[in-house]
Length: 327
Image (cartoon, rainbow, N blue to C red; front, side, top):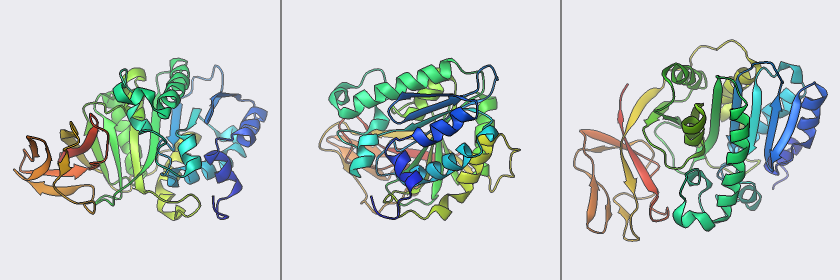
């Protein structure tokens, strides 16, 4: 860690909640540390909304860690203003400490009943801890449940900020979530019909949470992120946690739906474009997306846009999404 890393950021990155936990406890909240890197703050019997916020599921995605550290520090010093029951999760703590994306395998593919070749990875045990803490939090929650899993992307993007929302989120909750994403100036939303083993999809599927994976720009070094780029999402998240009136939508996000998943079935998998290709790059009908042995993935619609292209994933995992515009 560099000298630019402030004390509050360093504490959160190291999964040290001792300072903020004490301040919330002093303010009369019931505070628990259900697993390393997880903080639960609730007001018993209050019937409040329940909000989970996670960062660092990938250890090199440091911007959201800094944003949440400063936000949580400020809120703990004004603790009576916390208007929701809160679960904070710092995901892959070991990878954050190592300055790596993951230790053995992608943690954000572990939230599935059968892990196959991923079961022996170090991240498998961490996913179990996160699932147990998240289950305990939401099973004791009321009907209003949120989960915002904050990330940054490996590649540049036509839309610098975008979100993936599980299709199965209930309509009313989905509408409220999309409004919040608009307040946070998120440029695009992808409606996702099926899980790739992600943390946010798990919360939506098993606990009915209005959940989203929110991509907030590019990966960066801890302490060297331009936090002004996160101003809109920080303000929107602070308002959600404090129960403030909704702010006007900055801009209505463009909405996409998944047209097809690109699955890597063998080590022969090759993508048809290079690593400079941005998220949401448009490809015309019949264009080749990838080849995998004898199988060739091609664009099926008049236009599809590629998101998360990553030929380096393990065999059996998703190597990209192709999306089409809805609105």
